[in-house]
Length: 187
Image 1 (cartoon, rainbow, N blue to C red):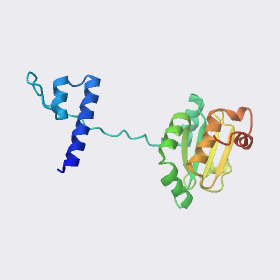
Image 2 (cartoon, helix red, strand yellow):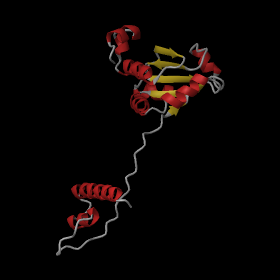
Image 3 (cartoon, rainbow, N blue to C red):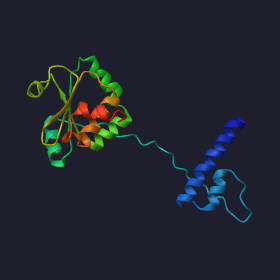
Image 4 (cartoon, rainbow, N blue to C red):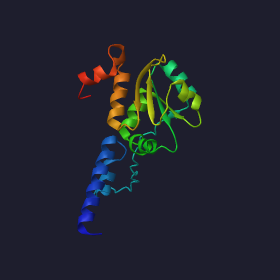
């Protein structure tokens, strides 16, 4: 190991040992041994199993079926977002790849909305019911089923989060989306 890597490893071990000491998980004598410092003559170096920090992954977007989402929205009184998709649509592929994997989008939608994914080929009756002709289409509904905002085509993460904010703050009770958007340019 090169001297620079060795120093970095010692610094990392010292920082980790300090964190564990503050958390009360390791006795002070063990932290000296972990940090690589010379142990005091009256102390005993205790080997410490250092836990490996595993990054916490954000939860995936929880897509429900239309029926489950409709019922959940009504009972939880959270707005509903229905994502109408088709397997052969390139824009749906872009949404899947770029937007639904975005950490901010996943977190916000999971916490604030009930989300449903409807494949237009598998469930054409649902698409017809909402008069959706093309994929991708995002339909935002109030918990009582009132149609609030429709986004057609590809929309980026910022656009979707902006509409979600409008819906989740219940701004639709006071104004339409276009007026709200013009009055809240930084949202």
